[in-house]
Image (cartoon, rainbow, N blue to C red; front, side):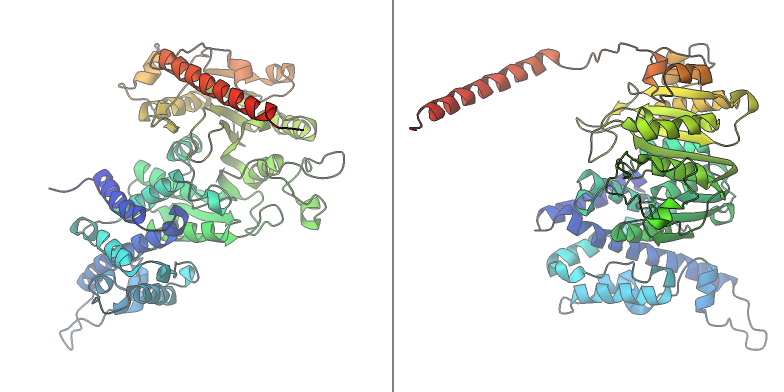
Length: 526
């Protein structure tokens, strides 16, 4: 019986994580080498598939009656590489116990980089840090028959699943922040802006998840369309390790793209101002310490409304730099979707003036409030912003406000996401605002509950279309909750009595500690 992709993801993760649990390695130390093994297995599977197809398509030489030898160029044309023998996963899996497995894997990575120039310096080569037995056991995990038979996008799914799991374990926290945007937020952005053609840019690309979901979107909506012919991908990422993850991620998914390691505050490495069809991002929030006197920043054409300077001439928060970048990258019909700190929709002083100017362009299309616990390593709420430079004339001075703080599915006590119905329902709201087909299934219970007539209408506590007068009245705030009203939603599944008992117990314990501490203080002789 064939194993499902979800079962395969879970089985592989379970096996790999159990091995880590019995080692001295942290999730951060374990992450890159594990993803490197997923990549190695993928490269071999892709090589085997390409080899069969190439050999079948080679013409027979009429003089010799035989086919010519397969060349490196044949594999390049097939979207693969001609693997050296010692870079094959099968070679590593069959390596005798007497051989140094760590050295062999490091060498395999070097050999692949020699054949695949775009991956030079990207693949992990620190396997000597692993215990030999642990490493051999890990190699066996990815050498199961189900993995050997895995084709195409299955490896992309496995790679994404492992990235998500490592993020949930906080592996990115030790590297200075997020490297993975949760699928629900990526899907919301992709569904809203529909990136199916042209130049796609993410100036804070992390591990490249926005690009991967864009590829899924294209394949889902037009299976016959080549992703690499439909879009051109450009990414910028500050963290060296994240840049490596992104390049591996694109390679595993068969996506061609240019990922540059650089600081978007002081550089514009792809020179894409005014050239992008789509911009997507989950930038670091509330970045401080930005040099407001930096020459590049002071002359940056991506900041048409100016830098958000304080009275002292410094930049205390980078949010409105990012927001202007995303807007400035768009061409005359471009769309953008990005995650942003909740504070940005109401920020005052210089930020408020920039926000007012952005609103007056007519390009702000939608703001979505997101509940707590959508991120794996931070619990704060956020907003997702959407720009559209090609809004219909009747919508130019209007913005769709969606308060989705009560729209979520509980995954665990600390993690929430959108169900498929909720995601489809939210997407229907932006479709309705644009005058497009809602794209809603008859079985969608979430949409039927909120819109029983089957058509869009302002719903208290959920959504409202606001105009420029409404925005002026609220001092140009972009916080949906200010406009949609309040819908009192009581969580009937919450154990209030149990929680009150816990609180009383905690209070009693704290009181006892306070009494003991007071006795010690009073017993001190002065």
